[in-house]
Image (cartoon, rainbow, N blue to C red):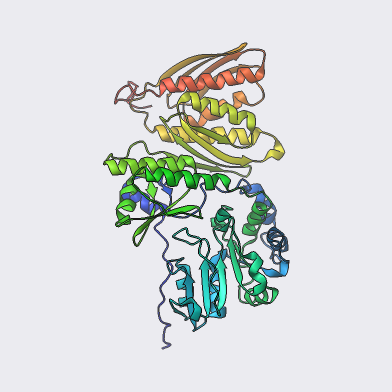
Length: 507
């Protein structure tokens, strides 16, 4: 009988969101993962239309080895196309480098407390991990470093130097100008570009080293669908300024709770502490997932809405306040649209809407603000066919989120009414959280989609809504209508008792 190869330590993924949610009795959609170092949302280019052409040709191989993507990467970094090697995430290239340069040899990392994949790659190559970079055959430099967030110096070593720049966009630094010296730069679309699920990475190096790497990477290990997503993201301007500003804000806010993050050059914060597992376990019932390292807690930076929820969970955990009113993330993806909705009822009227349909984004903002929701909607639709698909899908998705968030509607006032004037226009809205979808809406004049938008919301929210609005300016009439609906909803959503306001006992 053939002897089995010796076992290797395998990369350990954290538990799935479903598993973590089951542990604490939450819906997976109520969990926010602060343990993955990825943005809160994918890029606006990540929608079905982006991959439509690739999907139509999915029965074929790309014989050009994704020439357009490699050329775009080369142009992005100012190198030649023959200096670019694609991989299924930078992890595949890490493993390839270990097998090429350290098979049965030695590997070192800088700093020593660095990305765990380097150690696993060394094991796959039969290499020994050593502490002295000067004596290693292969040296990985994680710059900026994961998990600490620091920006290490580039060492002078005799072995092959690989600089992993997964987080370099957040630091605004790169060693690309050193590749003529024979170093290898690794990059990924998983972090700043927000395409972790697509698994696209690449190496930048000399033409000779690029040939050696490419010969050892499986042919077309990147899928055509992933390549299309990466190309679209690369052709759209990358702006991480908001993420960097949010990182700095979150660091200051954490200090108010006695947590002292190290200076970070990445999209996460590393907080030294004696018992990080206490926070990981303690925050989980609030739907907040963080990651513990020996002697430190690591927290991914997302956006202000998510990060404020993290801060609130830390506040309540430290105070011993049990979790209540945990918000939910809702997603809707169709052939025309891709949307993500985060909704909290009641909230503090913190609203951000971005679907590319400016007028109706503004209308939804008015409804949510006057309704007292915390609402964030981000997504994109097929602008080629006008506003219909995007507006309709957004309102249907919002209705789904609304119905799910309300649950059995126990204790709510149920009925609400509001009149709102806006210059020459006036709108009257009456709402019943009835559990039955019924819309009687007259908006005159209608700017185009206002009536249908509210009808779409009603259908999924399972409410009864009557709206009458008149005036001479279509914008004013529509805006008064959405404001009136919001204010009527705010009245209907008041907490009055612990019972369902129906003689039947259910809505």
